Image (cartoon, rainbow, N blue to C red; front, side, top):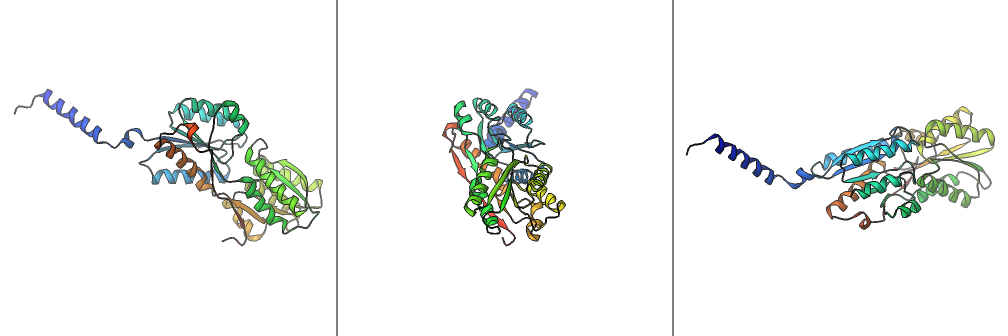
Length: 317
């Protein structure tokens, strides 16, 4: 048989078609999942990102991942822009820890309108804002109020009725900050403590430090500071030391980041809550991937997927 150039070209084309036909479907149209977090300056979100990347690496055949976070906990505008950029990259699903419970809803609605599945982690989106836009977004995460009450109850055991305490809240427009404050207030009310003030430390070390120092100046007989996350607890510990009140003003936090562990060990921090940062994004990603595999629409996804939160103290294993 004589092989002409045309014959060889046809054979090559058939070989290429055969290779494409034999390629597994996931190699051609693997779902692309975007993970958008809050501040990567916060160890909690760096741990979250690491957990997500490790999961994707272990499941590389199943999906691709693009992950990013803002530089500042309160830079809502930057996070909105980040979501818009992710949508422009033709993603299939968006897993988001919103910097603001209301402000992110319009851009999330725009993503859903483009056929993108959205899953909410860490900080719950505002129910009324979602209802107003006519969308449902599943929340995958822990009960922040219950978690904070666990921490508050542990603190209450070290205090007596009538003792004055202050609460350093996260960004006040976020649902998880509000819920943690409520959980702390539940525990303090049950223990008979007096909450002298609730002030926002914006989730950050420096602002947490400023709020803690101000509360101790205003209330020299303050007995404890309840911080809405461990970053603010770090700031509070530094303020307590600077005021010469180590051991006299107790500090609790929330998140169980690595930096807090030596402080739990030596008593500078009495307790925190672990909501398993490395797994938070993974739970959200898996919820999105299951919906894609089952060909579910946004409205058909579960309203909520509860994850664990546990108390962590010096004696925790």
